Amino acid sequence: MAVHDTQRQADSLLDVEQSIKDRFAYIGRLLWRDKSGVVGLIFFLTVVVAAVFTSLIAPLDPLAQDLRASKMPPAWSEGGNWDHPFGTDNLGRDIFTRVIYGARVSLTVGFFGVLIAGVLGMVIGSIAGFIGGRVDSTIMGIINLILSLPYLLFVVFIAAILGRSLLNVILIFGITDSPIFARVTRGEVLRMRDSGYVESAISAGARWPRIIFDHILPNLIGPLITLATFEMSAMIFYEAGLGFLGLSVPPSVPSWGNMLAAGRKYLTSYPWIATLPGLAIVWTSLGMNLLGDWLRDVLDPRLRRSRK
Image 1 (cartoon, rainbow, N blue to C red):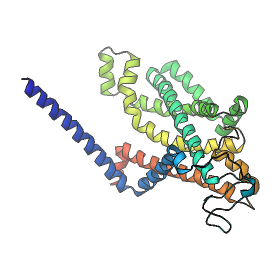
Image 2 (image 1 turned 30 degrees about the vertical axis):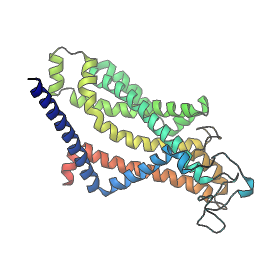
Image 3 (image 1 turned 135 degrees about the vertical axis):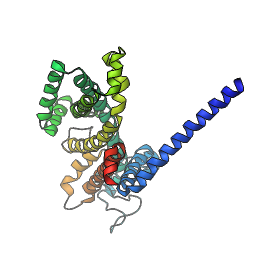
Image 4 (image 1 turned 180 degrees about the vertical axis):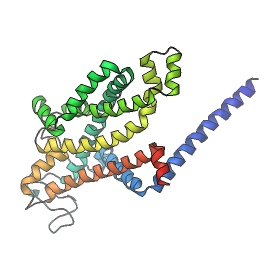
């Protein structure tokens, strides 16, 4: 009897392993079919690898100054050399190294900002959509009020009050972006509230917190992952904008926004100081938007059927 039980367990584990392999193979086929998704994934992974292995890719100190080598052009231009492949800025700091280190700041702000916004938005939107009534009206009234404000102006106002700090920037984006996730979550909850499995859970006597977290939120993962991808791309842009205005991380921290602000006065004479960090922002945001389009198609079966 024990031998048969052991064999059944082994067969079950093999079935699960095969199911996982089939799932990944299916996702890989969908990705390969959409070439823009492949491009977006390559772009995004390039930035992630640069941020994770910064010390290996860019061994120079991003804060080290050498005024004798200031404003050196990129290596492919006349007067440049491969010791500084992207050239140097007005203080002689290596731009390639600073661009690589700047990826850490942008991805940190984007990831943790979206994580905070997603968690807050999911909880608030789920409560509003499932309970309904005055609770829904009150929550959605506050959310609509926040969304009616000019977003960038609202963020700049809060950042000016709180001061320059990486933690402050993450919290600002996480809190101010949560209404978007709350609105999307509420719409999905309203759609699923009358579904059969939710009604069965209610009939079984399940309380509303358990229904939300066990039955509704797992079905929101697909739409929210797609939204998170686009919002992370937007946060990278907004963080660069705050850095350009001098309201993001301190000047000593190498970030793409700070580099844009430092290089704007040299656009006509030494354009690479600001152009290359700007291209890094475009590269990252383009990759995330292409990846988000692919995720939207993969996670929404209706879009896949319409493209066949």
